[in-house]
Structures are given as structure tokens and as C-alpha cells.
Length: 111
Length: 112
Image (cartoon, rainbow over all chains, first blue to last red; front, side, top):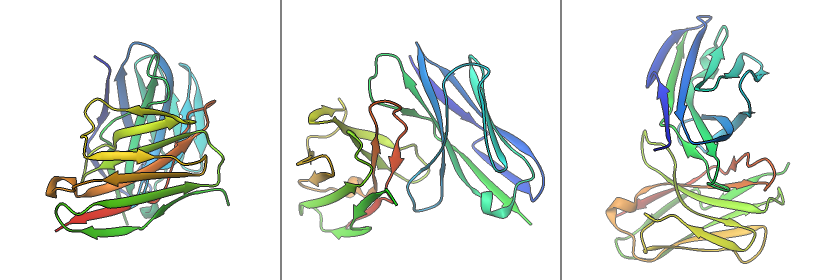
């Protein structure tokens, strides 16, 4: 069965304390892995797409990486405005237009 | 700016009273999705359209219907809302090339 698991469920960091969020997947064939940020009461905001192992993408303090089994979202020197839920999703061979979402990591960055 | 717009942002309806949520997009994407999201849960796909082709998820209740009259607009109809249908409803669009989904701000549905 195709599965997407995110860890930890929640993470509390102090401002400037770098860390990583994990998205592990067990799927029959990966056609893309997507990272989203979701603020409370809002729709998810697209961050990155990764297609193949070894690929990396960066945006400001965020860097996403991909291996054959998992993806990491690295947050360097986070600020309070980085507080949000981070969702990963995968597109799987044979599922056409659909994404399978993980349950997210709730990140809180404090001063 | 190209975007996904959802109306209304907040909707209160009574138990059993039909309600329609709307979504429009200026991205000219050919794929449109409706998701239901409850607190601290992942978005749950209800259905999606690839152009005019409608795709219903197997576990989407019959109470939920959708219409896509043209490329830009998509509607979610809940025929007889129950208390369990209270949730955030998210519309998303994607191109048929990258499948990167772009979400609207959501409609928060309350059922009284």
C-alpha cells in the first residue's frame, strides 16, 4: 500500500535553531514529491517539486532534498514567520492527476 | 496576479440545507480539485476534473456533487449537510504537465 509519513508531528524551535523535517514514502512509483506550507485557516502554499533522487531545491531559508525513500525539508536559521504546518505530497505512477498527502509537521519558531 | 479564488470564505448553513461553494481560477489550468480538510488532518481529495472529465473518489459521499461549467469555474454542492461535513473546503488547480497544485484560501463551512 502506498504511504506517506511525516515526522515529527510537531516541532518547536528557537529563532536561529536550524533543523529538518522528514517525509518518508513507500510508493509503487514516484512521479514527483511536493512540499507545501499551510498557515492556520488558509490553503496550502506551494513550495517545491522534486522529481528524482539527488535533486535539491532552495528558497530563502528552506532547502528540500530527495532520496529514493524520503525527502527532507531543511530550515536554516528559522524565524518566527516560518511557523506553519509543512505538508508533503507525492504523485504516484498510475494515479494520474492525484496527490497523496502526509499529515504534516506543525512547526513553531519562538523568539 | 494569477490566482485561485474561493467564495464565500466562511459559510454557515443549517443541518440538511443545501449549500454551494464556488471556485474560480485565472491560471488557465486544466485540472481542478476539491478537498475537504478537518482540523490537524491532511487534505482529503473529494473529486477532480481533468478538463471536462470528472473523477470521483470512491469514498466521497453521494451527498457531495460538483460542476465545472467552464475552464475557470468549479462548484461544490453539498445536498444535505450533516454536522460531520463541517470542515475547510479547499479548491486547487494544476496544469496537466507539472501537476503542481495551487490552492485557494478555502471556505470554512459551519453546520448548525
